[in-house]
Image (tube, rainbow, N blue to C red; front, side):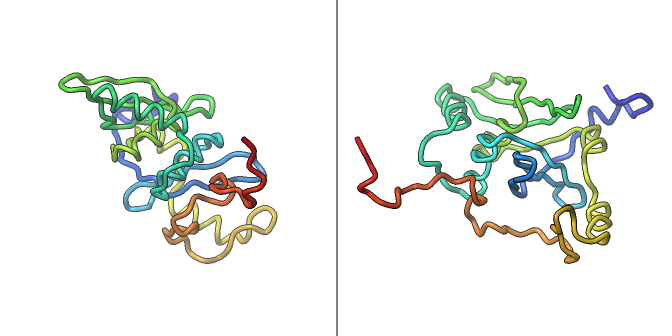
Amino acid sequence: MPKQGGNPAACKELIELQVRDVIPLVEAQTHAVVLSTEDGELVLPIFVDESAAVAIAFRLAHMQPPQPLAQDLLGSLVTGLGGKVVEVRIDDLRDDIYTGRIFLTQGKRKLSLDARPSDSIAMALDGKARIMVTRKVLDEAGISRSEIDALREEGPGVGGSGDAEPMHPMDPHQGQPPPGLAPPLVPEKTDEISL
């Protein structure tokens, strides 16, 4: 349902999003998954816990984690049962919590399951499934390019962060998961390994 006075059609109109990055927010002790429209004019930040951030960051970097994560188990179950993730949908925003569904096919059977957007985004990246959001959610929580530019013009953010440079899509992590998200793959000293 839309907010009072809102457009009911906004709950049905769907917009496709792309995952742009996972950003650690140290002061808030959380991470933000940055989704945007194809043209980059609207950005939708989704705040996720560390496990979801790690799962999404590994997928964005096209890397395998050293050990399977919960999202890997879910993906293995889906494919092991002959299913495929075809779409992830972020349906609503209630009390600052996103709700969503994951759409699966299993042969001729079509399934829709309630799912946390953070988990389903990781699964969408695995299967190259579409990530969709309702217009209502984008209207309520999306940030426009002009709003981002206006904030940048106001100067550095809290603690001196931010810059006056225009925002350009890029990979600041050069194909690697963001610092602090990827566990070390090899111990620094092999004599520290105990069996």
